[in-house]
Each structure stands twice: as structure tokens, then as C-alpha cells.
Image 1 (cartoon, rainbow, N blue to C red):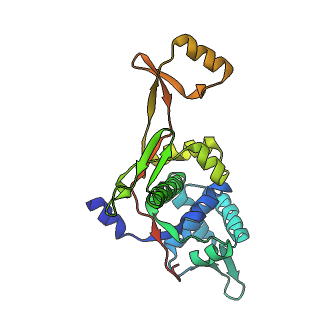
Image 2: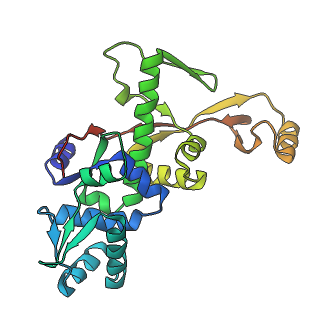
Image 3: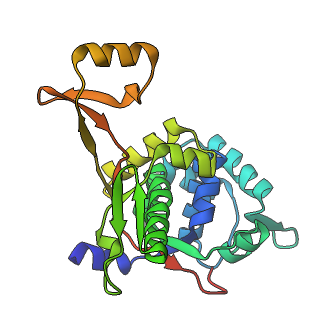
Length: 257
């Protein structure tokens, strides 16, 4: 709890979930990392990219100055930074302006801190899975109960705290909804879990198959054969992973930077 309180006292960027997902879809993680670093360092929203400043950015992010210049160019192309030709200062676009310009409707956002910049794919993965976790329980609350893959989920009472509950989130679902490859969806989930942003619980269902049945199934790729595993002297069907986030999703107010 003490660590959480200390984190809340630090400077952060309240980042829209849709922005996080956009970055993952467009493979802009490294570019986004530089933009966030600028937002966190230059709270007045402007910076001059002098030779010494560029070197400071490169050293801080453990990349070359050439990489920084390349990423700054991409950030400008994205419209996240513009130059004031009179003062030669680069002006950082506000998060809300970026949100409006991209047509991102939801104000659901997460806090991203300095420490998160060094594991950017993990925090972006956490944002995506945390949003789907919230969306799942919102659906359960609306429909009172949801049946998924033989399991029924209930929103037990008005005081039920879904934030402490696990929710099934499939990498196949991530791919279908956001057009992010299953391999990337799996990779960022693991990174988010390893970084402690989310917890992943594996789910298995015992099935009555013999070794011969499994060999046949895998040979002809039927009956979800790729998800069949052997443990404790029995065969199990690996089901959808259940996840629980360890951060809050906030709603941005207007005119936040």
C-alpha cells in the first residue's frame, strides 16, 4: 500500500486506453515511449531539440541520438508535436487534442509514470487487458450473468467489486477486436504479467481422452487439439486465460494535458 501511495504522488500522464491500443496496432511503442518521456519531463509543453537536449534524451532512454531524431520525426508526422517557427520551440500536443483529432470517443485512461517508460510494451499490454477486463464485467453487470465456454459469470450484487475478480480474456478475442496478432497479444500479456501490472491465471479442464485419442486429434487438428496438454497423469484442455489488473482505469475530464 505504501508503494502505491508513493506512486500516486509521482508525476504521471493520464493516457487514453484508445491511444495505448492505437500504439500497439501501429507498432509505435518506441515512438510513444519518446513522446511520453517528453510529456513527463517538460510539463510546460515545449522543448528545443538542441544537441545537448537530444543527447540527454538518448542517454535517458538508452538509445542513440540518431534514434531520437528519427522518433521525433515520427512524432511530428503523427501530429503529437508541432514546431513554432518563430521561437523554434517544439510544442507538445495535449492528450485531449490528440484524442479528439483521432476520433477516440471513450475517456477511459490509465496513469503512466516514469518507471513505466522502461517497460512500455508491458504497460500498454496492461492497458489493453485491463480495459477488456472492465468491459467483460460491465457486460456481466448489464446482462446479470454471462455464459462463456461452459462457465457462468454473475454480477452478484450492487456492492460486488469486479476489480478484485478475474475475467476471461482470449488472445483470439484481442486479435478479432483490435486486429493485433495472437502472437503479439500473448507476448504483451506475458510482459504485463511479469511486470506486475496484471495477474494471469491459467485455466484447464480435464478431458477423458486416451493417448491414442490425443495423437489422432493432433494429427488431424481437431477438437482444439493444440490446446490439449498432459499433466498429473491426465489430459487437459487449456481454456481461456483469466486476468486481473492491479491498476485503476480512470475517466479523463476535459482539458487535461
